[in-house]
Amino acid sequence: DIQMTQSPSSVSASIGDRVTITCRASQGIASWLAWYQQQPGKAPRLLIYAVSTLESGVPSRFSGSRSGTDFTLTITSLQSEDFATYYCQQTKSFPHTFGQGTKLEIK
Amino acid sequence: QVQLQESGPGLVKPSQTLSLTCTVSGDSITSGSYHWTWIRQSAGRGLEWIGRIYPTGSADYKSSLASRVTMSVDTSKNQFSLKLSSVTAADTAVYYCARASPLFYLHHWGQGTLVTVSS
View 1: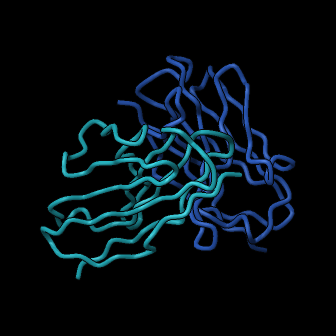
View 2 (view 1 turned 60 degrees about the vertical axis):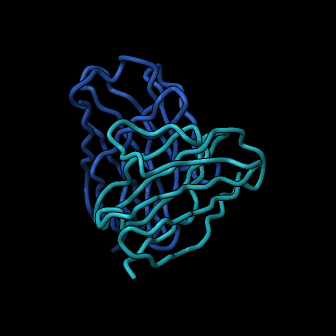
């Protein structure tokens, strides 16, 4: 199975800050990567797919990028509703594994 | 707007079979080239992709669960289902159903249902 390793596991930030979350794949997955946001007690929500394509309705302060097998989710100008847990997922090969999650907390 | 809703017992005894159904509304389960997917989430294992099924019945399962998992589609009821046999406490989790795009991205999720395995 392809392992997806996220870092950091948690991060504290303030409203208005810029935050970067990284996901590394254990092998090449080309651009088969998605990012999800999960609020407590809710189902995950798709934010970005194919590395950098924003899902409909997702604010433009969210962006994604790739460098080799390293993928980055960037949130600029943090808003209160952005404090949540974020997961990456590869869809290159079955099983479609997720990262372990990054919890974004208010500083 | 497509909506998904999981249903099934919230408590299953060890060694028994967990059975969940996902009811799809707002679209036909046979429309488009979507993959109907099950994911679970537990504190110990985070988000875990269980498998997916296509409306034709073609399915792929996580290999470590494959001997215990069966997925099916009922197009007449616009539902798809998950069966997980010989459950243990390790199968306790919130189970989600979701609709994946042709490229397998999970655009639509159900709200999730907690299944506890306990005697």
